Image (cartoon, rainbow over all chains, first blue to last red; front, side, top):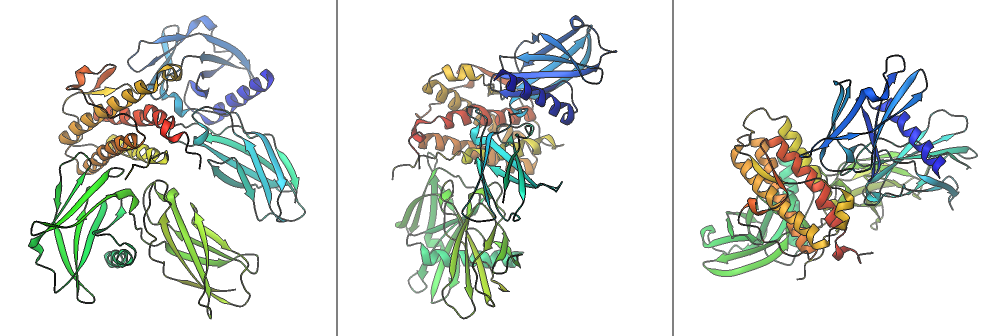
Length: 213
Length: 213
Length: 160
């Protein structure tokens, strides 16, 4: 749904604000969808028409990307550029100017800055063995990339703050073993590209699922 | 250590003498290290300069590999050729001549004739559960190939001749379950490439470790 | 014996990792690691819409000519570099390119006849630094080569 897409987009922006020191912060969501943004204090920022965002792929002329401005929490503003025509496996050079003065510049490879949607339909069920749970999920649908995804599963018991973590590669299921009896487990999954062809940031955590042992 | 390397090399030669009917017998130990050899009766064999070992990769001219001769048990001699420059996924054609007469010829793919060193640092420890043991080991150091290794674990009790065998893929640990109480177990591990990308022979068994249940 | 099709993409992933190791080694190399003259290299860039509209033969041809260019370029770099640590990376990279050709061959992708000179190839450009060359090498393997192998007909029925 559009709501879900907007919520996922918002989460990705938060992840980058937390994880990425460089500016502009950029992420790809799919093969056709690349977003860059940066944050400014409302009081120090200018009007939209003062800024220009240009990008160029190796051996190409530079193009301009139209900007949008959105208010953000804590007296901040976010400036966004969204590209539909994207080139991967080639260096992309980005420059942001304000009134002719270069304020940000960055070179990156788009296929290395993916943030995926979190895994969907996380499902937990009991197994024939008592202290085991069967976990499965649906990977984000991305052509050419499903064999490059790795997952992190975190599971915690109700009272505890510390979770146990398992990493899973190239599979979308896991058996959790050696659990404690009579406990309510809370389980969440996140996904990332594996770093060989594609790379990026860990997705947001999936909505949690619960199961008692 | 060099001693260890020489011992491992010797074991690989024994494995091939037992397992490989074709001649010359050949094995890769790493991506840069390929050895072929054959055995002759001391009495029937000639001097080193009578023999020539040539190899060629697809679409390349053939090259000569210098030979070494070593005495072996039972009145035998071993003739060795060692290559540092190897080419994988391409057919390698090998010919051995003695005084101009072809005595052996063989075509192979180098990536399919690996023999690895046995797993190292095999470690066994007790688990929280009574009749289980925790086993772990260090895979042979071959960069980017550890996800293609499979292991065989054999464990026997002191009095018994028959061992139980478990096969482990792409993991270097195993929990042995359903053991008998109050027994001394002897545990050994060996390794082989899984046959998907790379293949070969089972390694020698690791040195045994012992643990009482 | 009939050649077995090599469909496990981890073969290529392994070469990609080694290509990246070579790139890293080059970046930290201080002496005896420069390229003596500029060399032709393939375009690495992939626009998926454009790539998907090409037919399989054109895709294969683009990959094979790119691999050939990289072989020539890395061969030249090998002769102009004197740093021994880099020699071993470059030898390995060149061998891996030959192995990739062998993988393509195993997938029944038509044999490639190299042109008399790189100038005959379309869509090439030139790099003059060793670091740029090794970056192109990695990006080419990660991008076009991987996409071609992924779609190989010979591997489509392979549901084992």
